[in-house]
Image 1: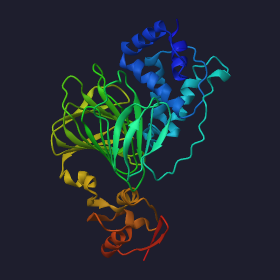
Image 2 (image 1 turned 30 degrees about the horizontal axis):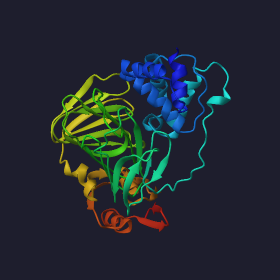
Image 3 (image 1 turned 90 degrees about the horizontal axis):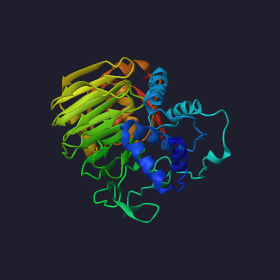
Image 4 (image 1 turned 30 degrees about the vertical axis):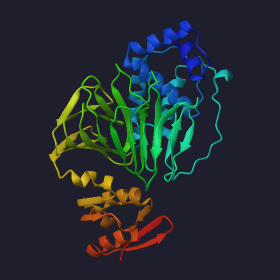
Length: 384
């Protein structure tokens, strides 16, 4: 029996014999690399890519090939862990393992689902996508009608799941201009900032580390469990904890990944090379991991500046306007075109909560004069 034959059947939800099920479960449990590898293949399937018959599976060698290609791409591409762009690179890797022709049996069924880009969505492991309406309360159910979690306004709660006995991943996407909170099965609370994506198991399983993948920004209040470390994976950096409160910002368009520790202790490591610890933080530490050079810098900061977004505030302290622009875009769900390049180097200290984008820009203009025009969601800044 070949593992790849069983994998293909699993990817297409075909029934496995008892012997095949035991064989597959044993293969998954042999190493986390096997589990990660199968998860990535499922990810390709759910993104409607075409998977041909694969000749062999070597998770260690295969994933190293992905990483080498991944590291050579531009910074933007490096951070698109769940994006279509990264999945295309992964699809190239899958294509390198095929027998040389595409088997029609393995062409994935396409879904004709069009979703509004400004809605919060939850994608299940089988590819089904649900829009989470912010003003409704209801249960989140699986394909068999069993309850997975509860939805209440801008919160999801996955505590109390009993029947799940394997790792099943969902993906939660938060658009610009919105925020969301999710409670994971272990009680860990995650606040997600606008423009963020988190991939998480609907239930953590004994014997496996508690892993989630993040694009964007999240504030984590992790439940303590010494036997099962909690790991936040980003494109280049992993944050490992047992129980603590910290903020991670890993937006694709930013040149660095930042971690701010509020309480407890966390260790940082490279997710591209190995799991060896690079730096351990103490409360009040701010660590900045530069994508291009893999260099890292640490300093003590006022953590409130980096966590105020949870309460609907955005705080800037001696920040360049060029960096402020992107945060304004995410917070207000707008696009800002700056034709006044000198303005990008100006430093500003400011705090906003209930102010409109127009009021915020007027506040900046009082310190460094500039003109701006608002047309729908496009803002154009010009010299005075």
